[in-house]
Amino acid sequence: MIEITGHPLSPESVIAKVRSSTCGCVVTYIGLIRDCSEGKPVLSVEYRDPDEEATAQLQKIADAAKRQWPISNMAISHRIGKLNVGEINLVIAVASAHRQEGFNACRYAVDQFKQRLPTRKKETYQDGSAKKYE
Image 1: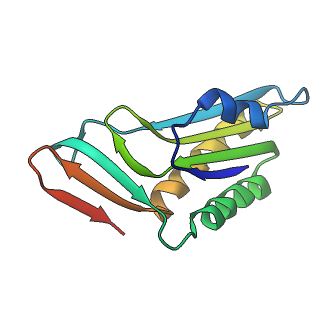
Image 2: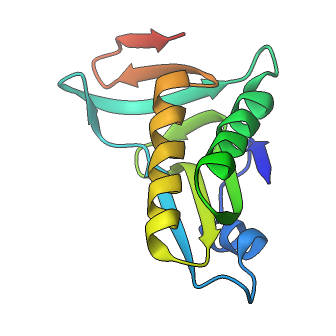
């Protein structure tokens, strides 16, 4: 399950989409907007998906994880729009029979998200400056 949304993310609802009676665990990652980046106090972070390619990129990450590890299911939910410090921007949930495969697949998905950055990102700092990640 891949989701790009402008609405607040609920980790519990993402977990509910992957869990099943055949799984021994659900490993989750919750990404938050932190208060400092590049050595500057952060005011907000904005994510955009102008080309509407983020869903396909996230699906590729999930598909690759499923090929590498025996996981039952993976969900990736990414919030776009302007987010304030402390808000959730990413939830990844991985259901698997055993924890090691779940942890490995979840770490892979987080790392790939950070490398590929499927959406455009703009950090705005409290001093009024901003940095774009394309």
